[in-house]
Length: 121
Image 1 (tube, rainbow, N blue to C red):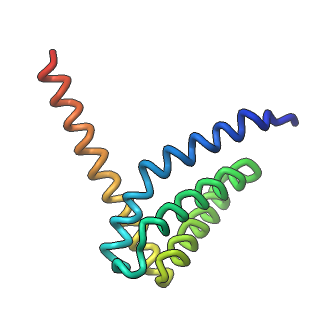
Image 2 (cartoon, rainbow, N blue to C red):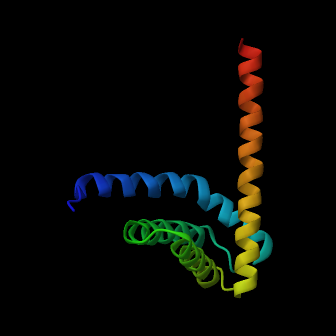
């Protein structure tokens, strides 16, 4: 099985850039709320997102299925645990709150988009 390394690296770079823009602020806000500002720095959130994206891309290339998804969840939680200096349960809560914050931001941006389109036309 041949792999186009150029396309894979470009795809990985694009994924890293988009995930840093979208996920890093969400993880940072969630970490600041729950782990405190001493433990949750923005650079820590950047490292969580970059390493999670790289490890997830490499791991996802070789494995798939529910077991692989559970292992990736554990890897993301381990990254949050390590960089935000917290326990496993707090890492899980930080991740859940990050998902909720992301959903709220996505909803608000969608609502703003609907209002703009409704007013435009």
